[in-house]
Structures are given as C-alpha cells and as structure tokens.
Image (cartoon, rainbow, N blue to C red; front, side):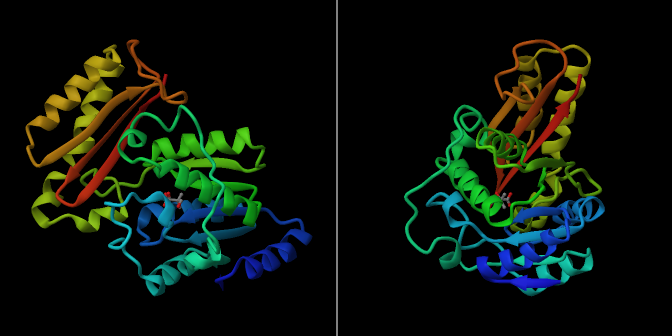
Length: 280
Ligand code: PAF
C-alpha cells in the first residue's frame, strides 16, 4: 500500500494507473477505522482495479463545540487495517495540504441539507461537500463509497456530484452493526459501559417505526411511536426523529413505504445517528 501525504504524490500515482485504463474507487474517511469503514474498502476492492482511501479529519465540518480535538486519531492502526483489506493508496494529508489558505470557496447544497443533522449542525454539510468536492477533484474517482449510516450525507454528496457534473458515481454501502444492532461508528468509543448497554435501543425504536410503516402507518405516526419508545430511556438526549422521502428528504405525510426513518440522539458524550430505509 502506498501512503501519500501530498496531493502531488497522489495525482502522480493515479496518473500512472489511469494510463493503463484502470478504474479507481475512492473511500473518503476521517480515520478511526472500524468494520463499517472496512466494509466500504472491501466493497471497493471487489469492484475496482485501484482502491484509494483518504484519511483526513476535516476541520471545516465540525462546529465550535463539537469533537474535532477529541476525534480519535490512530494513523498506524488505520494504515494497518487498510493494508489488511488490500487498499492500494492511502492519502493522509495534513490540514495545511488541504487548506493552505483560508478557503474563500464553499460548496453548498440547498434543501437536502436543511432537515435532520443539517438543522442541528450549522455549516456541517458545507464542510462535507466542500472537502468531498476537493477530494473528487484530486482523485477523479470512477466511484466513491459512502456508508448508509450517514444517510443524509449520501444524498447530499450524490446530489452535489450530479449538479456539478463531477463524473463520480456515489455508491451507498449498507450500515454495519454490532451483534446487538448498534450501528458501528467511531463515536461509539465515547460511550461508557452503561451507555453502551442502552445504545442499541435507538435502532430498536427505528425498527419498531419501520414495522409500523410496513403495516401502513403514516410518517407522523411512525415518528410518534419512535419518540415514545425512546422516551422510556431517559439517558437519550433526543435531537430529532424524522420520517422522510428517501431521496428528496421531504417530510413523509403519506402512509406506507417508501420512507426513511432517521434519528439522532446524544447518549452521554456520544452523538448517535441511525436510520432505517423502508423500501416500496
Ligand atoms: O463520513 C465521513 O467520515 C466524512 O464526513 C467524510 C465523508 C470523510 C468527509 O470528511
């Protein structure tokens, strides 16, 4: 596995492989790899000639009171795990490489960024779309792989790629879960043992909502059911529970699928997000 710290090295490597007509898949990450990340890399490994991973804790997508400083950074372990799944190129730049000057340009996606996490994390999606746009320009990947756990992120980045003709196909990859259902996340490391024991209830509540949708419930009724289920566990600091159209992310006022049910809640220091897609 080649490790590149600079954009020049990365692009020189990619120029060579492109000359041979090889496909390139990019897995954008912020490191702290768990099985969710590895499943993205594995999927790319199955589908692409060259698998590239970016590892960059992007400061512009964190709010002033968020966990940028505390975010887990363990380059040696991440590099070992990436190598283990056959990654070809690991791009791990310093902040100065990605943002040599204060950027004056931001990529903003309207509408899709307003509900869910967008309503609670001001500027977050502008940070995500801007860094992803930069990464897509650096790598020119054929496909980029994103976890479905960050459902809104997938929709926002996909729409940016379409609107700006970036020539990359966004591949959503199913959420990887712990045996008790908790969605894998780098932020699960913040949970105490007690909090970890109640954390799977977020997914259980979403599943209860999804079952109700399958039986013909409307979006607002499913939201109420999820909220009531979560209210039984006072440690959850609920931010939102929303039933939305899976692509437009508009409130789902109708009954039955298709719908995505998404929720975010603090549990101690960890902000957990999860979702269930109920397909037609
Ligand atoms: O999902 C993440 O880890 C980040 O938001 C991403 C896509 C790597 C952009 O920094």
